[in-house]
Image (tube, rainbow, N blue to C red; front, side):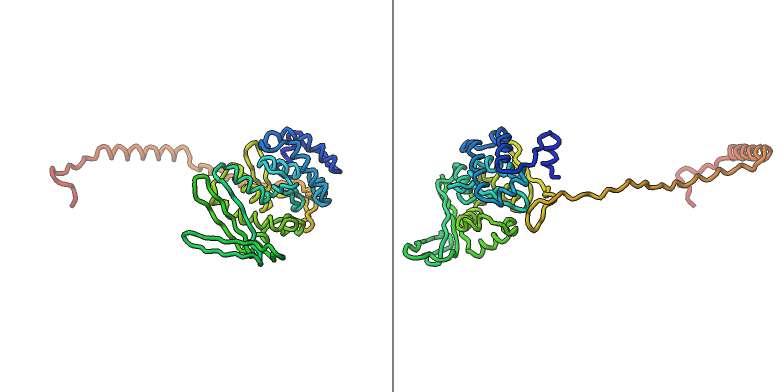
Length: 331
């Protein structure tokens, strides 16, 4: 049982297992107070709950995982609310992704752009995908120059690279670019992709390509609190670690979901622990050696005492030798 589950049991907040999206809706309604306490000012809890449930209705597998693990679904919605990102829908600021029996929240390309603009230090930020039939010229150096003319007639072909340009409020800009091979290498390392289930890489490939290059350039942009939170959440989710929102803080733990089929990502019955009787370990305490008996008689003791007294008197009567003045007494 995870830390969050133990906490729910300890506080009496453990929920009954839902059987449908309607049951999830009731559970989500009971969490409105929590979501309202962390949600950004750009959204309302009711709208966040409505669009999250709509995402489940559009994917049977996503709904199945959410019903099996409602806590992860509530947690994912809370994370999106904390960042102020709308799940799914036309904006596509965030996605709900099934991963090993849990629902994870993944910020999208438009979500990262929105978070970057909230810092107040960026006047504009955009990312573009360059395709095979586009005209593209890149010159690096002290003053990088980019020329990109998209193909307007006929198919543009397959993606070959992506780039991002961010302009800062007080002058200057940052330019980031990546080849498609570099982007696909990052995709291959994604835990959600490794699970073999459908991810935004399958449904919104070009958006994920843009997101990857924006994410690469984030370290050079003025960071808002929301940007920092999104970076922590995404990194933890991609590593399969648990993320919870505690007030204004993002808490990451190493708890792993229990009883989950690592191949299918579905929840199995919790494994039973083998019960063992406590064993008593015998301690070896060495026995004390018996005390040695005194074989002397009273007469022997009296003689020994008299000899000691006589020896002490002889030492006191012996004349002390006086060394000459100025001599160290060394022969």
